[in-house]
Image (cartoon, rainbow, N blue to C red; front, top):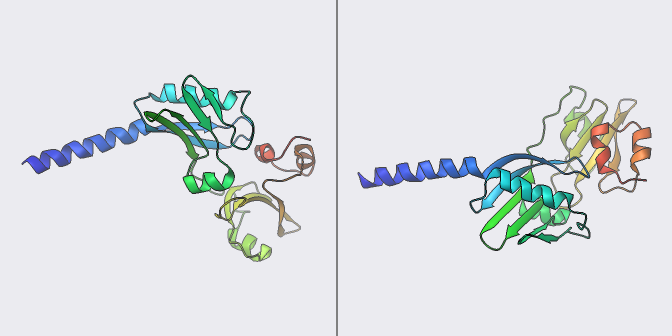
Length: 193
C-alpha cells in the first residue's frame, strides 16, 4: 500500500512542478525573437519571473558579448550563439543558488504556406547542409540547419529557384533588407544602418 501512495505523491508533485515551471512567451525587444520563460529553480511566481526577465531585457547596461547585468541580487546574461545552442537557453538569470529563470527556444512554427517546400529548397541549394524551414512567407523562408553556432539563414525564391539571401549574423542592414522585400517579421535579424 505504501508504494502506491508514494507513486501517487510523486506523480502529483511532477504535475504541479511542470505547470509552475513554464510561464509563457517572452519576446526579445531587439530582434522580436520569441522564447519561453521557464522557472528552473526556486519558488518564484511566473509574475515575479517575468518581472526579472523584463528588467534584464530592458536594462540599458546590457552590452558586450553576453550582455551580463546585475541588479537586486540577480545576475543575468545571454550566452553566445554556440553556448546557447549547447545549454538549451538563450538567456539566464540566477539569484544565488536558490532561484534560476531562463528563456528557452520556442517550438518552431510550422511552415504556413504550401509555397515553402523543404524538398525543393534543399534540392535547389544543394549544399552540405539539410535545411529545415522554421517560418514561411511565400517566397521567403527562415531556415535552420540545426547545427551549432550560426546555423540560421533567410532564403528567398527568385524566378522559382531558392537561394540564401542572408546567413545570420549578417552585415546586410535592415533598410536594405526592407527594400529587398524581406518580411517585416524578419527585419529584427538585420542590424540597423
